[in-house]
Image 1: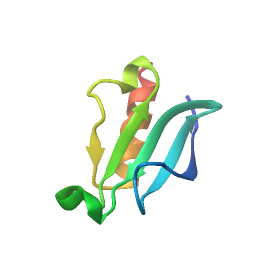
Image 2 (image 1 turned 90 degrees about the horizontal axis):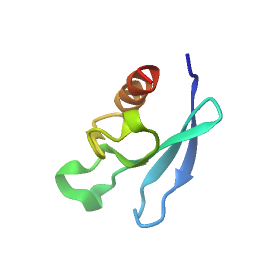
Image 3 (image 1 turned 180 degrees about the vertical axis):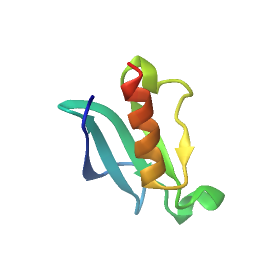
Image 4 (image 1 turned 60 degrees about the horizontal axis):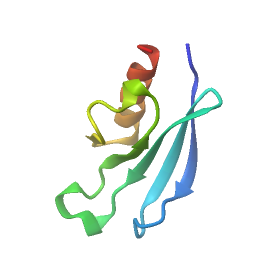
Length: 81
């Protein structure tokens, strides 16, 4: 079983948005971005800007209403590998 670890970052190109690097053990598996008000109806959602590994690329770039929801989805996908 892989252990997920988050590291906060600022992602270039997303003004006033926080980001999270998601690691499974030592491997970078995803970059999440918390969308700001600049994104209209999607503001406040978490977006997978980049995903690494075959189990995380389907569907491409899903969005989630919370960081916890995004992490649970990533965890489920990773554990299937």
